[in-house]
Length: 509
Image 1: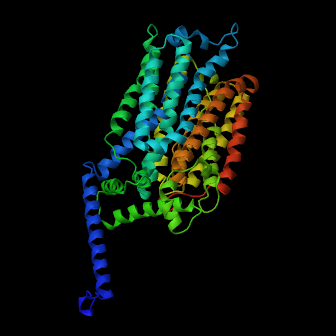
Image 2 (image 1 turned 120 degrees about the horizontal axis):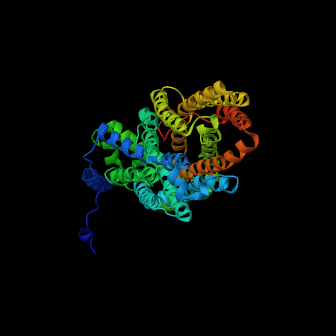
């Protein structure tokens, strides 16, 4: 071949320019496709309206956390309930009935415990929304079974089913709400929760319907209203943007962040939040790989699925420390003594007066929670827990003193002290424990960590409920001394071992 037949060689600079142009065109095309996908996931509900809707549905779900247990505790001594379930009537001829009475309350916690533990495997697979929907459907089945119960066995099974659903609910709702709330408002939004104010007064009203089983069936069935709101409402809400990023759905995540902040996807603040989440996910995923560079990139997708073994790892992620603190936090919430089955009859009050006092106590409990809501984003989480715990310890000590005196005036003071105790608990622990645990864990292990911490809550809830009755029977007012000491021990544990989470983004924590 002659030299004239040889094709001319293109300069290397020209080839590089063409390659660069092709890359720019490809990047531009991908960007347009991504923008179009983001636009296709745009939400009609945005900004404050969306935040309020999320808070309302999440608050409804969280109200269910204590609804069933609180209502059942109030119904145990109702005449029609005792007629249908004579096993709960405590009398000298049937001493084992005291155990059965505690059991019908505590078995609910067993169901909640199993549900919370199951969420360790289910939560991240289904996502926050579908897990909440599943929880609501299970609780609906359980509530129907409870309200139609005609035997002790059916009631026990029904309470286990309801508890199982609530285990999923209570370990997912705070996480979902935290992941959909901006750092500046996250504390206040999660602390806004439902209370049992209405249901307490419903119990009182139906107490005066002694000839019908509606006396106990209606209060139990009323939770169906909340469950239907939860199941129906969650269908109109977006998935957590952090879960979406973690599961390779970035366009949907950006659309949700845009809607939550009520700004266009191109807004710098929206972009900053989006890329902070992506960076946190990449760091967590690559941090679990032993490869570097290309090896880590190849293992990216395989690393997206968190292993439960990561809960016991240290290193940069500090997952083990986070898990232990979250479990301790929920354990402490129960060991404060908030779920002592303290009946106002123990204070010498009549049946009607004790029910009225209990309902008023619930009202005051609800109002006291607004103190924490108002200050949670101004005062540190740790400070709220410490102040509340110190107050609870002193109140328990005063209850023990009044119990040892045991006369008319002392009983009145004791009733007032129960109101004081609830005020301190509402300030320090009612919503703060759930907020703190939802904030503490990294995104990669957030679902299993919250499942374990919630399981801890239900475990010690069960222990306290089962121990309280025998404790008051054997050592009477000295039971309060035990819980005063427990509260005193909790204070230095918070001070020395609980890091502050307030005012920081979830990725920053």
